[in-house]
Image 1 (tube, one colour):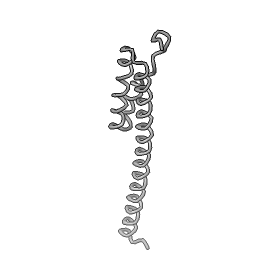
Image 2: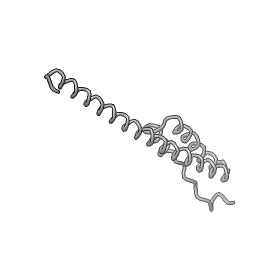
Image 3: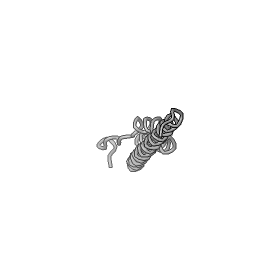
Image 4: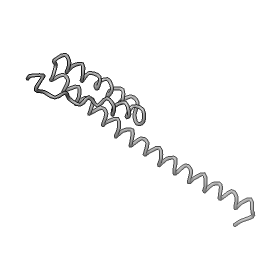
Length: 101
């Protein structure tokens, strides 16, 4: 395959960095490593290697985003129930102190 006729594959570097900062650090780093391989493999003439690195970077970036989103959602739900429990306990102790029941 001629390199001049082949477009450079997407490297997913920006997306990998954002996912690393905001979602899931370990998997985002794997995405960054694969994203960094895309341009160097393409510039070295390894078209197949650059396409594989691009596919791997895409896979790890998306996986990190999904796992980070799910974990953050779980944290928000747990936090909500903890706050709800604290409010209910605080309300019950105020009734006891004021002579309620």
